[in-house]
Length: 236
Image 1 (cartoon, rainbow, N blue to C red):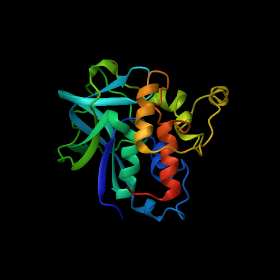
Image 2 (tube, helix red, strand yellow; image 1 turned 90 degrees about the vertical axis):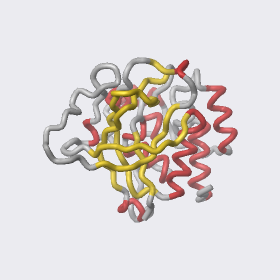
Image 3 (spheres, rainbow, N blue to C red; image 1 turned 60 degrees about the vertical axis):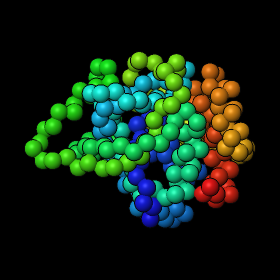
Image 4 (cartoon, rainbow, N blue to C red; image 1 turned 45 degrees about the vertical axis):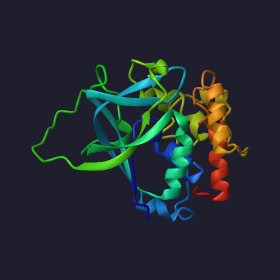
């Protein structure tokens, strides 16, 4: 059982994408990955941060902003190896920071809708006098400067419908509800190429204007590095 807890707010909100990163497949077999039974995924809210779209990219970023709120998921039970793979996936545009997040009761993971207004959630007012559960977690905070940040809110539903297939190579139809024609146009296949982490990050910077996954899709440089990590069983 792992003892790491992380807060996710973008592409990793979708369990198939998270599974692809840490297990090498979007549809892992629990018998092959027994640590899965210790993984806990719960909806959560991060306060005093704001989520932005990243220009020409499928994925978002968060930066500190007083009064802002970000809906996401808090995932417990991650191993050191899982976190290494997640660090590779996130690349050099982010740094990990420690935050306090509020666990949300009565909210399904697939109801993680974008916030209303500028960085503020429409439904964060407490509906109960019960004290919310607070969890200490790490999250990936944008450090690549403001140039690439779009003031508009990132749309999880749009990501699931139109973009997620290229991040997971097909998979669970409950999480990829885009039309089949679009999926066929993407022509996504699982990769088997490899590259080291530093090369993956360099290639990411060279191609970030062209590749909306920033190299993190199944056919991208970081995606290939993740496949290498999974194949070799490396934990750094």
